[in-house]
Image (cartoon, rainbow, N blue to C red):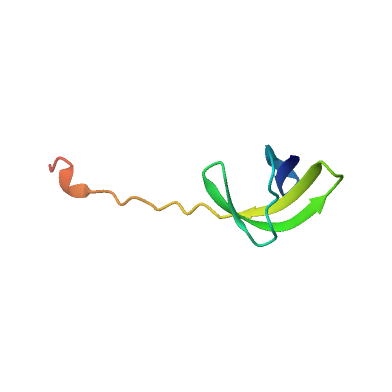
Length: 72
């Protein structure tokens, strides 16, 4: 069992105690968002630090529906 810390831009996103360590280039899901493993650093025999890059959130702008407004 190893402690895995998922880090993005020096911010710890998640710490987990797992048996498997993700490989470089693998896709993982953290806090409901997909992330790609950039680098895996093994600090000691029980601690692993994983650098990830999360997908950017794309917010779509909702168009106003003027047909439902009261016409004067």
